[in-house]
Image 1: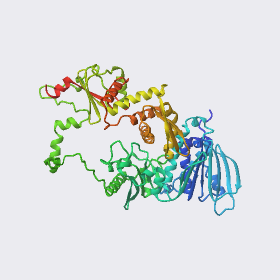
Image 2: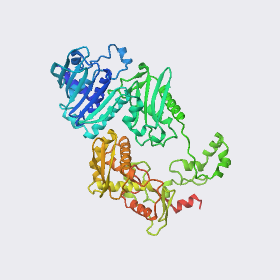
Image 3: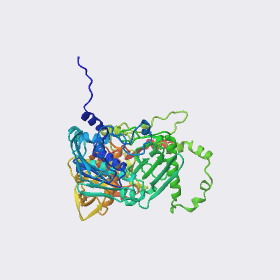
Image 4: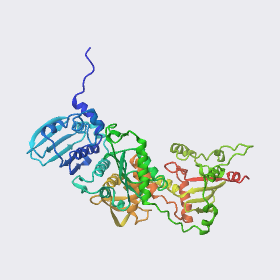
Length: 611
């Protein structure tokens, strides 16, 4: 019988390797930009057409390559960085494994033009499917230009997995931003379909951050700089008020290489503890420099996940450095002018709260009742009788889902009932400008106005997306606004779906848009803030939820447009909101599974007062 095991042909082996390294146009952009940095370039230009699907080109003024090196660089594992195994553990450059160009040549048509300073002519190469189609001398300036055309032309199945142009563009901008932040002393530009999106002159790190992440950070950056014999850390973190609902503006670099590290992010979040809300994320651009032997960057094809020799030291150092920076910035507590001055004289305020007093307070049943989640109505059983499970307080028809459990919320959809009293003149009032209290058939219900309105809007928007478009009110004075290139790519991706939901937004030049209309029931004059908040919320859901684009958009709009806590409502508005809530298919929870209301029955109240 013939032997069964054969070696893969080079072009097939390269395509398999390409699957690890080049997953989308942004992957190629990252590799080519890093190669240009390694070549010592002071100017690097990224040019793309059709979100990199038809063209992705990087032009640099670096050292260039000889004719032999130009041929060799497309071979698998061809590198100028590694000569012995020891070199692998002393890496300070970006690319070093020699996979990138071989992988790109396996899945695209590549044109290379390169010239060294000491040579009179340059070298031109055309490569397709890992095969050199043309090689000839050419007149060229010093440096290298690599153009990648028709990505995945020979792997149609892979090409079909690419997202929309706007989505792929967002990934390219992300990779461009990471490299440009790492090297603020290098000029970078990004041109898409003939339009220049970024023109970044060389300068300081702070200037580069403001250029890339937005001028709103200009006066709101805190300097971080700590040095030890083991490691150094430098960069900037945002003041607490700049914290957002999304993780977008968070960058860690180790030896100038962008990394993703939930571990280090946890250290930084700890430094901000009690300074920002728990669901917010601070901005940071931090660089950690340490001996390359203390870190392994070779654990993942994209080199974004790394291992530290002693990660606990790095964790403690990051946390301490950021805490120190924020302490120097000094967050001053604001005065509460509504507080009665006489309260300040009470012994409970004046005297220190000792550990003994704290232990005594936290052990009481009252403290536990108000601090344990969803236990405010819990009654501690007496020694004689065991209190039944709290669910027994409710009728069998009132089967509420557990908070946060979306699946159980869906299961309870058909068993939900409306607790509202049938009397139209039932009393209704607002508490703390956040809650609505109204009587029910056998007690009262406490409605959270923001959560309730979010559920109402979610179901209205979902119906609109399924074929019942929301009425649009044309703006008498259309509002024009500019976004960062990354946000502009997100908005372009959402424009068609937004139109179905009542928003008419059109492109108006480079990263500029004009709002021609908004939903008829939305107050006009705040369009820019609405779009900003929508994009933040959408990015938040994109990070957290694995739903369709339209589902994320609907949830974002519902969350963002819902009546905010602290808003004073008229009696008519309260009645309408409660009525709309109980007309919903699933009134008892928000789309994320948080409760919209709580019901308190008379027998439950009687037990609270031991009646």
